[in-house]
Length: 120
Image (cartoon, rainbow, N blue to C red; front, side):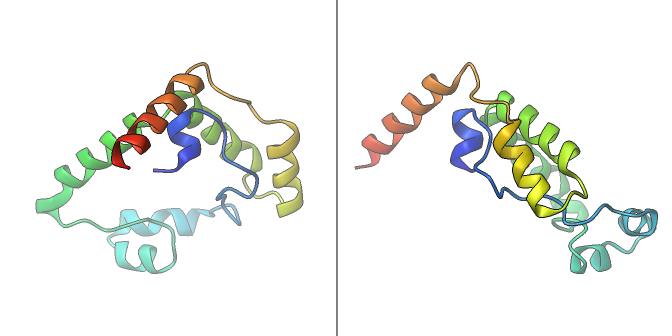
């Protein structure tokens, strides 16, 4: 889990983004039974065995829910706005048109610091 997503603000500039828009052929690979090829090409993050599917999806959902709703919304908006842009334009979008901090940022930072100090 990234600190930015946990505490409730947008990630620092140069956060992950798509380097090129997907075309129809790329997007179809996982749906045509070619999941391993889609994984090799970086179009999907992982391939799951049927027996592990629900456990892995549940664990993933729990990780997502533990993060800030504000950061999720801002990150999704940023991905849509910068999809296919050159790197410089994408970075400019992040720096000059970002969402700022979420309403829960102070509580999340306090929670993070409390967890960190209890581990020390």
